[in-house]
Image (cartoon, rainbow, N blue to C red; front, top):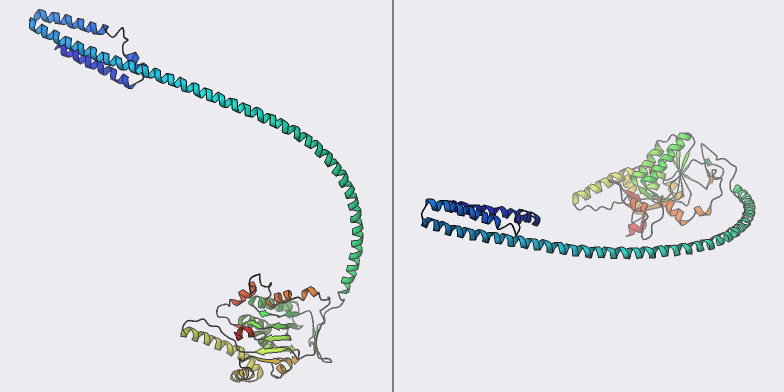
Length: 446
C-alpha cells in the first residue's frame, strides 16, 4: 500500500510540471529544481521508503520484503526517467528562449541600422533642399532688383503716357461735345412739335382722308392668342384713358389666325365704350377679314385685298365617329363665322357658300377694297391716311425683314437649323377644340 501511494505522488509531481510547460520559460525554471537539487528529494523519498520497508520487514516475512524492494526499485526507476524527461524539456525550452532572444537582438540591430541609414538619407536631402532654397532666394533677390529697376522705368514711362492721354482725352471731349451738339440739333429736327388730332368723325370729307390719332392698335401678321391678348389690353387701356374718342385697329398685312383669338378681339371691340374702327391698308384674310367686316365701322384702301373663305380642318381622327364629330364642330363654327358675314351682306349662309366657290374653285373669295365696299365687307373706301400722331422721323432700322418677321409672328426669327420660329411652332400647336382660320395658299396647295 505504501509503494502505491508513492507512485501516485510521482504522478502528482509530474502533473505539477505540466502547467509550467504552457507558461513562460522563466516560470518553468522557477518551478523545477536545478540540476544539483533534483537528486536530493529522490534520495530522501527512497530513504523514507527504506525505513518503512525495514519496519515492514520486522513485522513481515522475507519474501514480502523482497517484493517490496523490487517494487520500490521499479518506482524509483520510473521516477528518475520521468524527471530526466522533464529536465530535458526544460533544457530545450531554455535553449529555444535563448535562440529567440539572439534572433530578436539581430533583428533589432538590423532595424536600427536601416533606421539610421534612412535618417542619414533624409538629412542629406534636407541639406540639399536648404542649399537649393538659399540659391533660389539669392536668384529671386537678384531678379527682384532687376524688376524694381524695370518697374521704375515703366512707371516713369506710364506717367509720361498718362499725361499724353489726358491731353488726348481733353481734345476728344472737346470734339465729342461739338459732335453731340451737332447730333442733338439733327435729332431735334426729327421730332415735330405737334400734338395728335382727335376727331369724333375721323374721315376728312374734302379729300376723303382718314385722320388717325395716337389711339392706334396694330394688327399685323398672324393672329395668335398672345397677340390678341395684347390688342384687347390696348383697347381697354384707351377706354380707361378716354372713352369717347375713337380707337383705330390698323390692319396692314394679316392672313388671319386662331378663331378663339379673333373672337377675343371682336368681343373687346363690341363692348368697348369708345368706338373701334378697323383700317385695312394692304391685306386682310380669314379671321382678319372677318374682324374688318364685323367691325362697327371699317375703312379700306381701294387696292387693299380682303379675302373670305371657309375654315379648314386637318383631322387625324382614326374612326368615323371622331371624323363626324370634327365635321360637326367645323360646321357649327362656320355657321357663326360665315353666318355673321352673310348677315352683314344681306344674304343667307347657303348663298354665301355658293358665291365663295363661284369665285374660286378652292372657295377663296378675294376682292379689292372698292369692290369689298359694294359687298359690305368694308364700310368706307378712303383715299389716304393722315397719321397725326407721327411726330418722329422713321428709323430705317425699324423697316427690315427681321423686324417684319418679328412683327408678323410677334417673335424673333427662326433659329438656325429650324424652318419655323419658336413662336410659329407654338402657334402650330392648336389649343383643344380650336381652329386655325388663317389663309396659307402654299399649304393649301400641298
